[in-house]
Every structure is written in C-alpha cells, then in structure tokens.
Amino acid sequence: MWTRHILNCAIVAPLLNPGHVGDVGSGAGLPGLVLAIARPDVDFVLIEPMERRVAWLSEQVDELGLDNVSVVRDRAEDVRLTQPLDQVTARAVSAFRKLIPLTAPLLRDGGELILMKGAGAAAEVEAATKELRKFRVRDVEVLTLGEGVLDDVTRVIRARVR
Image (tube, rainbow, N blue to C red):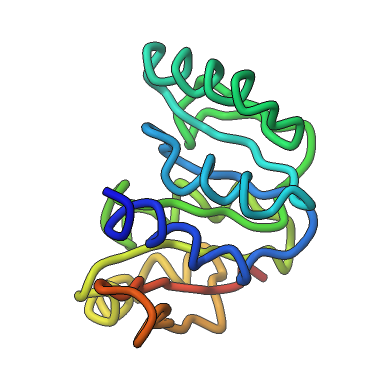
C-alpha cells in the first residue's frame, strides 16, 4: 500500500505548480489527497462522480484539516468550475485517448495534464493522435519518476493544452 500507492502518488508532487489543480476520478484520494498533503501551496479540486466516494473524500479533507482542497461530485465531462484549472491529474481512470476529452476542456490555455499511467504510457500516446489534435494537446512527454528511489517507478504523461 505505502510504496505502490502513496509514494507512487507523492513522487508526482514536484511536477505541480502553485495554482489550481483538478484531480479527475479521485476515488480513494489517489493522487489528489496525497498531493494536497504534499503540496499545501496548491489548491485542489477533487472531482468524483460517486456519492459514497465523495462523502469519504469530504470526511478525509475535514479530518486532515486540508484547507487547500474542495470536493466536487460530478463527472469530469459535466463539471462546471468557476475558473479553468492550471493542471489536471488523474490516476487509473481510463486510457489516455479517452482521458483527453475529459480533462483537456477543464484546463486554461497553456494548462497542463499530469496523468499517471502504467508501463504502456508511450503506446497510449501513439494511440491518441486524433484526440491530441482535436483538443490541441501539445508538448506530450512520458516521464519516469522514482527510478532508484521507489520499488515501482511512476510513469506520467505530461502535456500542454494550447
């Protein structure tokens, strides 16, 4: 649990910039809650459609005293935020090509996707050519984080929406 999930998320924290970050499909709080603890200088919106998970996330936010987190019950494609996000994270939600239409519209121009993926991240990028073009996603790169530090590395697809 600790290395495969918690540290796997925490290692992403240096990729975040101060600003507004959305975590799509927050579920059990991975990576949203972990990142909110690691980066109190960043404001997080945890976006989760399931009522039971939203209730649990809200309880954890209160219990942990995280004043940099709000929880929104909605599907990513339906959520209406008061302002566009600077960055969006997601972990174990869907294939990259399916995540693009869910996450890219939430970002401001120049905003960044920080999507945690598995060993097939590069292949997912290749399979998303049409969606990348349609949603103006640029500067796509696959990062490998935690080599030599964690038992299991973390792969992240990072890209900008222009």
